[in-house]
Length: 256
Ligand code: NAD
Image (cartoon, rainbow, N blue to C red; front, side, top):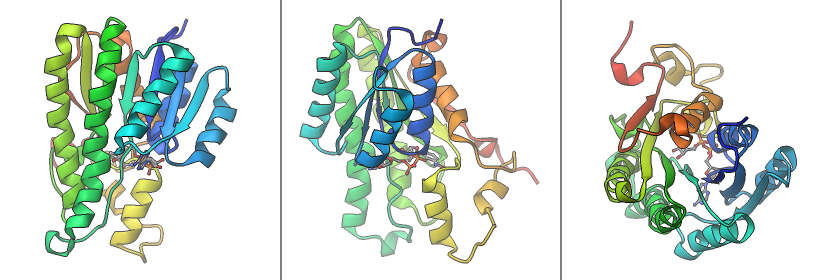
């Protein structure tokens, strides 16, 4: 028996590293999936890999209200309900100091990472409530509780979604909707390589973010997916309003 038998999960950013790992794990645990992303090629290959009996996809921009309504409508038309939503799509934005970011750079990151999560909450919470409750997991970051230079829009956005999560948890409790964040440190996906390459194009095999992690490695997408499974399933039945680190010790301090 799977932990998510008879459950329906919507996963945004499903074509990326963490979303993909969550989709595979959730499918293994018995969930039916709606995979949401901008990247149709990767969505298609995932449906092929997971099986069209278990997964469907829709291309959508999570910052666009009509696209958000569409991904919910399509999920309901195929699966009739939603039990779990992973609001995971995100972009890192430009790496530059605050004075070298434009207002457009800032707005772009906030639109995807914050408005996208707010719209996801706004339009999935009534659907979960109708179904007697459910779980929403938002992907924040260690950048949601601390800062590093050069990523001010991203850092702002990942702090902001913790606020949204808490608001959602307080408003959703009466309808048995649990809302939590997962907060990964650098995880080995395309995003982290893009950031490392932009900071130092000549880095070669160097992995400074892994070296700065007390466990001395990047996390793997599957390690975040397991925390998402805990929070999404009955294992996390008393967990709501929480910030869940998955960070190799980054938030604990500094090890030498
Ligand atoms: P990724 O770049 O592999 O995946 C991100 C996915 O989001 C991509 O498939 C992309 O197409 C999709 N996406 C971007 N903008 C979108 C939009 N407007 N609408 C729909 N989909 C959109 O990166 P990842 O590491 O898998 O990131 C997943 C989440 O984890 C993000 O929210 C990211 O901020 C967060 N996170 C990542 C790390 C890390 O080190 N990789 C650490 C902490 C938090």
